[in-house]
Amino acid sequence: MAENPRIIAGRSNKALSEGIALAMGIKTVECDLVNFSDGEIFCQIKENVRGGDVFIIQSTNTPVNDNLMELLIIIDAVKRASARRITAVMPYFGYARQDRKVQSRTPISARLVADLVCAAGIDRALFMDLHAGQIQGFFNKPVDHLFASPLMIDYIRKLKSDNEMIILSPDAGGVERARVYAKELECGLGIIDKRREAKNVAKAMHIIGDVKGKDAMIIDDMVDTAGTLTEAAKAVTDAGATSVRACCSHAVLSGPAVERLNNSVVSELITTNSIENSELMKKCTKLKVLDIAGIFAEAIDRIHLEKSVSSLFEY
Image (cartoon, rainbow, N blue to C red; front, top):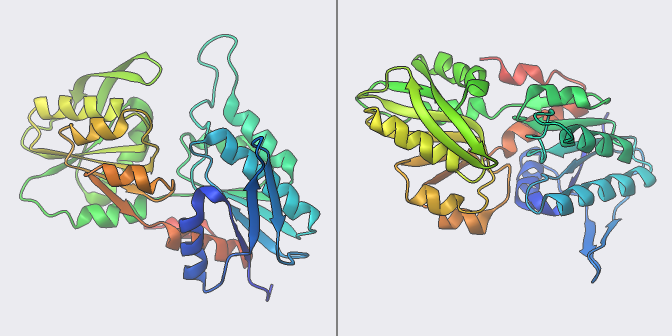
């Protein structure tokens, strides 16, 4: 495949898309995306992509339904332009938390979104840090799953302190993710036991593990309203931790999240630019945003050249 991959930027990830293209030494494909006065989305690919290996970069963050619909329309436009292969690159996959039925008469929306994206005409998909790994099985197309952990771990290693560090999972479901960090950083592992009282409302109960006199690092895949994180940080501090930092791949930061973080005991929230939310992020004084353009650029290049993607994450 002598021809370079073709990068198309959706409106939710313009800066990241440009960064990926820059890292690969190419330019993004010119694409007109506009909204009609009634809200309908119009897309026109302004360059020839016939026979091309096309990567469409679009996170489905807020406004999630608009961004999802835009992705579907871009896919359809590229398919009708006779691209040879279409890869949906979704640094952040919206609806990922609705990956199973937890109550009667509720949807599995993550599966529905997967069906929609596949029906639109993709040939494969590329994600980063899905909320649950089993979402890969919702797609009937090949899926590559990237991780921000190598980037995060390299940054955390540089946080020097005289105190011992402990890695904490904010719930039982995130223990596997936290264990990777604890192993690579050669430090202890703990769990924060919480009870969810309502949607987007969580109450941290107690800490499993010794945090007294240690620097705590809470590891999660996303921070939405920051209720879980700030409650967890308070519980960890009350248990005697010297400091509390947090690390997440996706800073959704909806509702009162920024205010909660600014007023919390969390000294730093380490995240990535998987979600383009620059204006909101400027209001949060505790964010450290790491650039994932290089990871995606390398993954896209490997997919294009039919090389291994999993070897990117061999420590």
